[in-house]
Length: 514
Image (cartoon, rainbow, N blue to C red):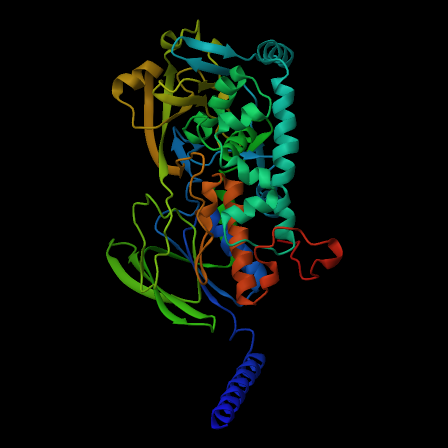
């Protein structure tokens, strides 16, 4: 009898404590229950995370963004002979909803990419080349590939993009996913299934010829990701979309978008390198978690480094965890938080102002050389080479430059030797090398990391294992922002639901303005 009496008393105490806690929370101001948020990385993923979080949590939320280098991350520009050129993330597709929305909201001016002459290149020279005249190009493509052009257009539009675009509807309704796998499954089971097969297998199943796969498929994978058609099928589909026409960039450089996102978010930019994420409070079952970020801040002027730390309720990592020059340590956690593999592929972008070595390419004259060359053989030392346009419309366009004034960007998988450079250029006045850990090493059945590493600890770049592109990183950032918001406010019905609710069941609080 005493046992039951003690049990009832204990239950009443717990109920009373819960009511007191609920009452205290109800009396709190918005400022009291607004989280402190720390974001590591100020590339497109980190800055769009800050922007979406501001939209979701409101004006009083405290957001810090840590960046050791320039805002923009892999979206950067390089100045050569007084003109600026895209050095990293260089193209935006007209299918990229978020990037287009940002450009329109921020009044950023798009610059269309003109479709020049394209050449497919192997050890024997240029295997196939388009024409300056559209009618001739279409005739040559039809002769070589038959119905493949129609097939790939229908496949990318109807099989891939329409299902992929479901993610925009999920996010419009405030729904989020804890894993990349569930996000892809929500788009469609066949979208997820693409990650279990190689690009060449997926394209073959789509009805494309072996010639098209070996040439255009390989060229898209090599130019966009520095890899072959052994990459998994979903990233291969993204590569094929990136090879379509109707591409553009932003005047002043695509870095303008992350710069504007950071500005509009009102977040506090901290110039420093985060070294450690430490779990300092984890009250089991209470939802009360906090983290301490230890970072090194460089003092302006004298270059001295100073160790600092800050405490946050929510931490978002918006930079690759693997292969980074500064690896983040996770301490005081009861388990491993990065128990996945996500190796990154190094890309070297070589910028040369100079004259093409037409003899090596077996081209008759400089004017006959294509504006873009894509390699279709794994044994060639470079991936692609293309003539660049400046990022600002008031600068001199590439069509007005003499052959030795043109600026070319060559993608390679390693730093070239001098003899390799001479195979590409007979003379040069400038040469720059930029090395990037640009995207993961892709293969079928690779790990798809989670967005949620621990309670209120999130990883935007998990999405890059599905596919790396500016739009993909923004989708990952929006997902993480929604996930953080839903978990903070205990809106669990909007987490990991892979079926879209009916319109009538959709919440009236959906943020269609994001």
